[in-house]
Image (cartoon, rainbow, N blue to C red):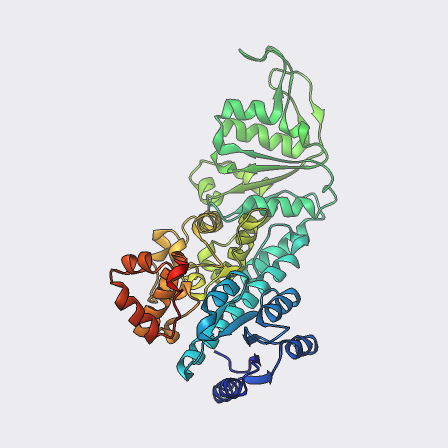
Amino acid sequence: MATDAKILVVDDDAVARDLLVEALRKEGYDVEAVASGGDAIARGRQKAFDLVLTDIRLGSVDGFAVLRNFKQGSPDICIVLLTAFGSMEGAIEAIKQGAFDYLAKPFNREEIRLVVRRSLEHSRLVRENARFREELRERQEWSQLVGSSPPMLEVYKLVARVSGGKSTVLLEGESGTGKELIARAIHSNSPRRDQPFVPVNCGALADALLESEMFGHEKGAFTGATGLKQGLFETAHGGTLFLDEIGDIGPALQVKLLRIIQEQEVRRVGGTASFKVDVRVIAATNHDLAVRVKEGRFREDLYYRLNVVRIVLPPLRERREDIPMLAHHFLQKFCGGNAHSIKGFVPETLELLQQYHWPGNVRELENAIERAVSLGHGPFILPGDLPVAIRNTGTVPWDEKAARRGEHEEALMTLDEVEKQYLIKVLRETGGNKVRAAKILGIDRRTLYRMAERFGLVLAEEGTE
């Protein structure tokens, strides 16, 4: 944890203020202190702070006003409320309004250290995730292409070089590596960008149906051909035809496809006349076509006609440094336009994503992030939100409860602090009802009072239950 963070302390109690300043400066932080809410707001307009610790009771401009003002100027800044014993309910309400945490007076050095560390770690995560989002925005001209690893930079160079021409392009790579995205990038950066981009999955149809789809057919060409059908080569005239899974087509169709690519002429099934088309062909396969040529399963002349420019897409496991940016890209995609308030990922989640071997490549990663967004309840995606197969690859122990408090292994709570936090949570959930709280905790009311006294909590008066 970097200790150059800028912290503002706001408290009209000189003793408490000096204690905080001394404790924080001993931790190495850059600390300033003011005695009123008005001074805090004025200082915030002059200087950016990473964290504000403010008392609630400050006079006319109280801690709530400080909270609202700083949040308006910097929504992601962490605000920690300082509360007297009788202000616990107000602190809980402030947290609902956006405060990150609170410190109950009197507080000790360890409490200060832990709360400040948690707050600054939270701020660091927010900034880091914002940086990824900004990098993604800067890449808009490349549409959905995400990644800056050396293998992907080579792909981008080839895309840039080949986009301006008419040459046939062969894309090779495992399933899920984004071959269609690359094909679309070539098209959208070419002179044909305003003309159709027509994709067809050659592996999804039998050859007879695929032939009719690609070339079209005349009325009566076969049983069920009740009218003239325009083929995809005609639909793509002036633009780009993307033939996905090209390695799955049969020998007879390979011959016809070779002729059309060479002559730029199409004859519909059942037709007698040919007509010219202007189509750029981009083909893709998850097979090694050179091997299929040697095995006699793919025509050599068609292979060379398709393989004018060859682009090999690396599997995700060979460009792991791109995973964080891809993960943030998909997070934006699935959080956009809905009520989710997920801001990013904790470091342990990104570490798990980078350790996993990704047999399904980018498509599998996209599905994993969509699942995490559906299951997560923010503000960050945690390891527990990932599929089991990904979680099981981890080598770093993970304390999910600590993570949901914004803590990590070096900032674990003491048993007393855990007990105190749980008591506060139960009181909050029960609205301060001591009977219900004692029942949930499995203790009698006398023990509840003793616990509250030990932790400096003030329970509601009897008549307020």
